[in-house]
Length: 162
Image 1 (cartoon, rainbow, N blue to C red):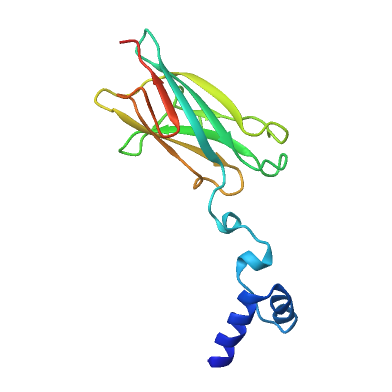
Image 2 (tube, helix red, strand yellow; image 1 turned 90 degrees about the horizontal axis):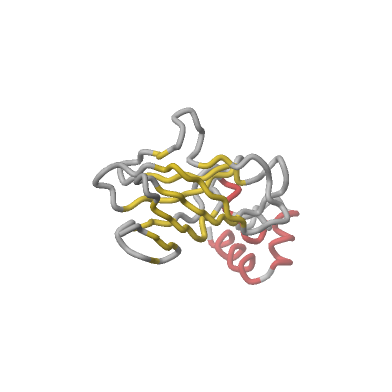
């Protein structure tokens, strides 16, 4: 047991020792292997800003800015959602996969903003969560909680008619 602890201490102190331990069949921590934590199942499509605008018909338009290390067709952010506190995903069409589907990678456009109008917030709902999805890791990146009763908050802005 003390040998393993000693090896781990050296591993944390020196990348060269970590490389030596790999050669001996030991596995260093993920951060020394150069692997990102999100490739172990945590999504990395982050919502970094959301602007919501109320329409005269009572629906809302969401302008959502997403950051994701799009790598091409094999790994890109493919949608974002507006989610009520009870977990209901609000979609402009019931058959849609997301509130807003993203149809292609944005490799050279990061971060990027895409909008969706016609979002109907159920009566009594004053806060929604905005989350993004990517085709490899799914959900799990940074989300933003939007309080529709305030003008602005951490990572969001709200424009109401009244």
